[in-house]
Amino acid sequence: MLIRNVSLLLGRELDYVNTACVRISNKYIETIGKKIQSKKDEQIIDCEGLLMMPGLINAHTHIGDSIAKDINIDEDVESKIHPVTGFKQKILKSSGVSHLTSFIQSSCLSMIRKGITTFIDFREGGVKGVNILQKASFGIPIRPVILGRIDFYQDFKSIKTNSPIPESKKLDLKNLLNNCDGIGISGPNEFSDSALRHFSKQRKICAIHSAETEESNATSSKVTGKSETERALLAKPDFLVHMTHASKKDLQLVSKNKSSIVVCPRANGALAEGIPDVNLMLETGCNVAIGTDNVMINSPDMFKEMDYLWKVSMGMKKKRLAPKSILKMSTVNGSDLLGGKVGIIQINNIADFIFIEKHAIDLEPMHNPYASLVHRISENTIRAVMFKGEIIHGKI
Image (cartoon, rainbow, N blue to C red; front, side, top):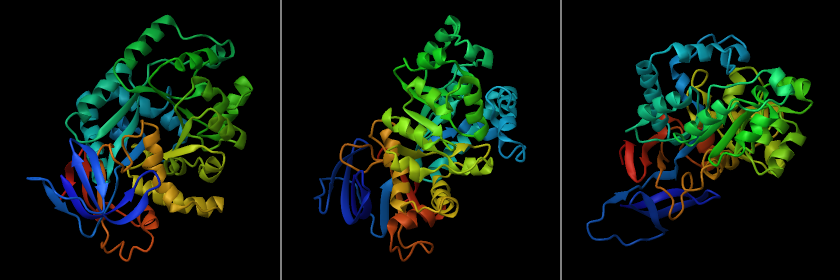
């Protein structure tokens, strides 16, 4: 397939190229250039008036709770989403598999229409929970990266005495990791140092919630004498989620340990838990990506997430985030969590793209493409979405 006359955001820096050609072969980007001669019998697509950008990476979701949209919206964060006592867990355990599957599929389709081609999910429920998501997403043209979780949590007494993970649960973890892409840990306040260090020995993706609330930070300090982030790093995570109340010292530790951060600003706002200081994260050298978090709380819409982050950072932190930096958080930076083959338009990468109508009524005239994409775009301005070199939504 040869795409002609398209504007695009090229490479890791999302450089704006006004007119280019892109050849796709076997789901990969083969060639990018100003002019490329077509091959015999090659499909040619003229994209005059369209801007091609990387497919979005939603770096943190809980898609299994799609069944619980907007339940008890006025309850506090612990009663909503605590990994043991939260009513979300009760809903998931009492819901039939067919119902869960149906609503998970709906959320996958919703993400596709919004240009999300990859999502990283924290999936509760052990191997059974992983299997539900795998079966629900099978045949849907979207890339789920599933981080599973065993049904095991420790109390404060076990944390203080540094109790290890029981051998039976170590076997459960090994079995889990044979069936998914990695582990999504609920948080350091549910595990001893010994347990967190055991998680660090796993060879697949490891991620953990940290410093989401002031209360969780205070609990960690009271029980262990260490910040929640200090303890989270014992698991040697590839990335930490939220970090809404992380200190500058915490962020420096994250940067030093070469872990990344995934922020979920709309979820933090909806739960009245504050807004992450992304400027400080960037200043301390952290790689920052973006996720939409619980479908129970938010629609899985990365464009809304970028718009919210841009404006609320200025409104509350009194600091400006460059729109291009935010766009990188949703593409390039998320790609770095997954090996760099998605989320970046460059040769040899997978051909996941969004085609935007440059002349859409809400975008034209597009004086600053980065700002336009971050805070003016909507589902209505998306002409088509490509996944692995195939148009999966819309038409060109």
